[in-house]
Length: 88
Image 1 (cartoon, helix red, strand yellow):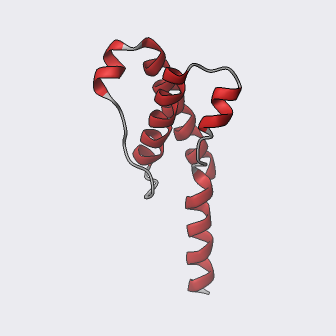
Image 2 (cartoon, helix red, strand yellow):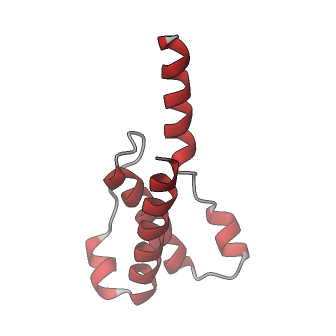
Image 3 (cartoon, helix red, strand yellow):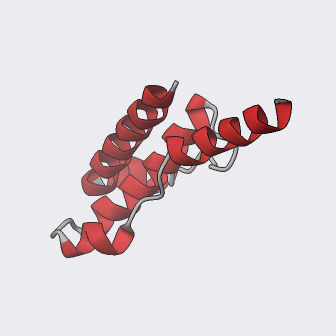
């Protein structure tokens, strides 16, 4: 019984923050700077909410100087936190 519970918990953690599709975002017309920020922000959001397989990423210089990167980072961060929180 404990084994099944552990497996289910592991699956929830893995599904909680889905990986971002860089190629898909670029194909959808988003600027490369935005996509870089989105991917970093998504990883940071998952890490902040407690996902063990993501790191907190933010290129501070780009965040302060590049509006596209900053907007992408903030969007990715917000979406990741909502995605992962919805699982719980």
